[in-house]
Figure 1: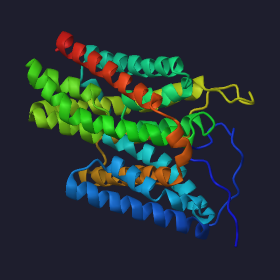
Figure 2 (figure 1 turned 90 degrees about the horizontal axis):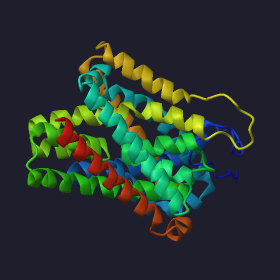
Figure 3 (figure 1 turned 90 degrees about the vertical axis):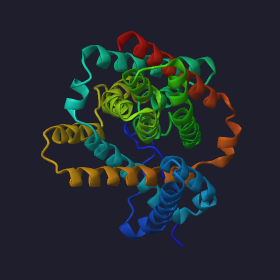
Figure 4 (figure 1 turned 180 degrees about the vertical axis):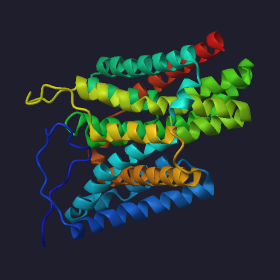
Length: 345
């Protein structure tokens, strides 16, 4: 029986991991089939019970974690957690247009950028204070600040396996999914209690709720007007994913010092390209929705593969410190978003 090495979960952006031997498409089939079936099961649960797709994909993946010990699964799971993830990030660009961002107005747009940067920075500071390191703080803080699980996967890809290992990523995905689901239910109630206008509530929810689906769900549960504003604000945060990835790529240089220039990952360029094309309005609405569905499927499959490959022993040994980073960063984002809504709108 042919033996396959375990592939790294996160992409090797800086070539700082051990090279993996090339695999034929036949080698990819077992792992891809398992990840695909897990994704379809997650989609079924999400569609029928209203659960977040990302969370369901991760939980089902973790339930199938024992399959990760089978070396035959390695190539396919590695493909799902790296190649499909990168293409999913590229296709996320089809969710936004430059017009949506400009429509916010300069002060509101500036507020979104400030909230994002402060939330990300708070994650780094808290993680360093807890002894978890800047890389984990960037991973967790960025997931809270930008777009939840999708941002976590993209940041893990950029950071590389040595900086953000599988156990850390899996824990962030669990924490961020739980935090996003909690925010979707609690934040609109808070907005009602504070008597926020539709515009204020939409900004607060769009700027603070983690995942896109939960942010829109929270906004539209408040009102249609609030939902529209929340969608624009949230998609602006998604659009800022690419610049943040570029900054992370510049900050976290390779350990061997072989590269000295700023490396812009190709999937970041692809993200911008898709956003630009979508801004021109030349993509038919039905095609745009199809692209978004493919992006969702790619990301969900990558998350499922993450759960299957996650080292459970390391995950259980990590403790509550990583979750604390997510909780505090989420509270920072909520406080800043509420302040911005009250001051600017």
